[in-house]
Amino acid sequence: MGEVDPAFIQAQEHRPKPEILKAEGIPLIDLSITSSPDTNLNDPRALDGLVEEIGDACKNWGFFQVINHGVPLVKRQNIEKASREFFSQPLEEKSKVRRSEEKVLGYYDTEHTKNVRDWKEVLDLTVQDPTIVPASYKPDDKELTKWFNQWPEYPPKLREICEEYVKELEKLAYKLMELIALSLGLPKDRFLEFFEEQTSFIRLNHYPPCPNPDLALGVGRHKDAIALTILAQDDVGGLEVKRKTDGEWLWVKPTPNAYIINVGDIIQVWSNDTYESVEHRAMVNSERERFSIPYFLSPAHYTDVQPLEELLNEQNPAKYKPYNWGKFFVTRKRSNFKKLHVENIQIQHFKIPESELAEKLDAALSISK
Ligand SMILES: O=C(O)CCC(=O)C(=O)O
Ligand SMILES: [Fe+2]
Image 1 (cartoon, protein in one colour):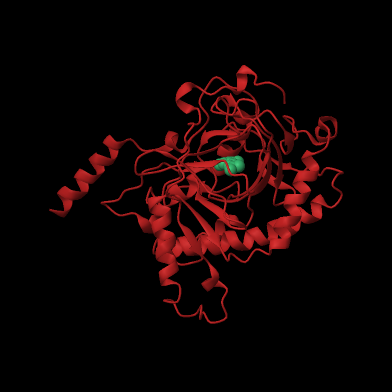
Image 2 (cartoon, helix red, strand yellow; image 1 turned 60 degrees about the horizontal axis):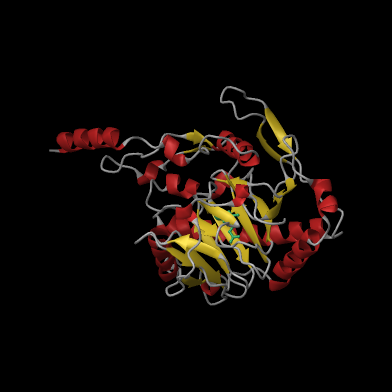
C-alpha cells in the first residue's frame, strides 16, 4: 500500500482524534475461578460473583477483557507468528489465496467498512471446513453451498496451527456463552445448540504503517454482526470502543495475553436489547505495523435469530422480527466485497418500530388494569 488513496479517507467526523482517551478502560475480568480445582461447578452459586461481573460488563460496556482464560499461550504465539510470516510475503504470493466472488474465504486487502476502504489486509478462515451457507442472498433461493478455506502454502504449518488455535478459542467461547446465559437468568447451556453447525470464522488482520493515520482507519466504525467476538491484539494497540455513557471513543490498552470480548448483534437480538453490540474501530499509525486476530462465534446458517421467548413478557415484547442468519451473513459478505452505494444490512432493519411496541404495551396494560 502506497500513499493514501482517496478511497481510504474518512469523513471529517469519523477521523481519529489526535488526543487519545486512555483514562478509563473497559472492565478486566479474571476467569480463573472457572478452571480452578477449588471451584465446585455443581454448586449453582459458585460462579455468582463472576456471572454478575460479566452481566454488568455486557450491559454497561458491551466490551470487556479476560485474563486467566485457559487458552495456552503457546497456541496464541504460534498463530501470531504464522500470521506475521504469511503477511510478510510479496503480494503475488498472498494473491494465490485471494478471495473472489466464488471463493469467499481467503486473502484480501480491499475491504470497505461503511463504504470507506480499510487500511489493512486480512486472511479469513472458517472454523468448520467446509462451512455450509445459503448459495445466494436472495430470500426465496433455498439452495445451499459449501465454503472451503484456501490454505496458503506458506507458512507450511499454518493450517495445523489455526486448527489447534480455534479448538481452544471454541472452548473459551462456549465458557463465555454459558456465563452470559447465566447472567440473563437462563440455563447455562441455553445458547450452545445454536453453534452445532456453526459458521464461526477467524480473521488474521494486518494493519501496515500508514502515512496519514489522521485521515484513515484500519477498520472503520462498525458493530460485529455475529454472536460474540474474542479478539487477540498485539502490543501496538489501536482498537477504540465507543463508550456507552457519552459516545466518546476510548482506546483499549493492550493487556499482555488477555482477550478482548465483545457482544455481537446476535446477542443483542437474543437478549432483546438487554445487552447491546457496541461500535468500535481500529486506528493505524505511521510507525508500527499492527496485527490482530478476531474469532467470530457465529451460529448455524439455518438459525432464525430472534429475541428469546423466556426473556419476553407483556411489558417486554420482542423488539425484533426474526431473521435468517445465513441470508444475513451472505448479504454482508457480498456488500463487504465491493463498494455498494447502499447501506450494509443491519439488525436495525429487523427492528419493530417503537410505535408498534407502544401499542402492544398499551394493550397489555389495559388488560391488566
Ligand atoms: O483489529 C482490531 O482491533 C479490531 C478488528 C475488528 O473490529 C474486526 O475485525 O471486526
Ligand atoms: Fe469488529
